[in-house]
Amino acid sequence: MFVRWRMTAHPFTVSPSTTVPEAVEMMQTHNVRKLPVVSEGRLVGIISQSDIDRASPSMATSFSAGELVYLFSKLKVSKVMTRDPITIGPDALLEQAAIVMRDRKIEILPVLEDGELVGVITESDLLDAFIDLNGARMNGTRLVIEADDQPGVMARLASITGAVRTNITHIAVYRGGLERSLVVLGVNTLNTVDLERQIADAGFTLKYRLRNE
Image 1 (cartoon, one colour):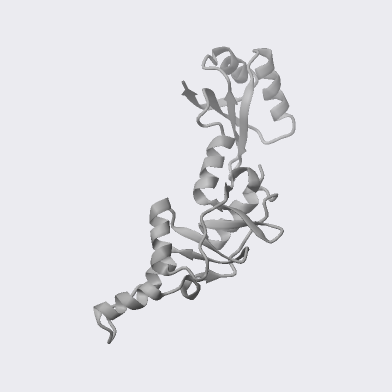
Image 2: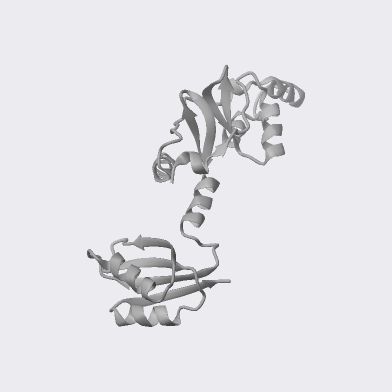
């Protein structure tokens, strides 16, 4: 799955000359916590709620409350934004974006194509993609099967589902340092009695069953 398929296209943006209160209002209006900062069509930074919190006036100064409010109202995004943010291309794999975001501890990744901002990938986008990739919302049954990690296992499972005329909708393999792998098999039916019997007869162990009606 490519980044361009799951990114939020045409994201809300601000310019470096936007005031911080204006950026706050946009975040609240559109229910976002981060905004790309664009100048003359080029990405120059990211402003986040945490950036704004750090720039918020502190009463531990010699200024009066009124002076602090006035100064904050004139503060520009360019003064508090995070410059030169990490970016990714639209044709990168989604897992590449996930690794970058996880390793760099960032919640949003601007997507650039030929130097132009075309979208952003957020943590919510990644979670939605994970749900879709695993077919977690689809009608049918998800079987968690314990199997040896060796060549031919997938072919054997595919032949079993074919024999009972059941369609595989999604499949995933979890290793995670276990002695045996866990295969999550999504199928397009709620009646898996015959399928489960043949899976057991073939030497596999059924660990869990989840039916989505």
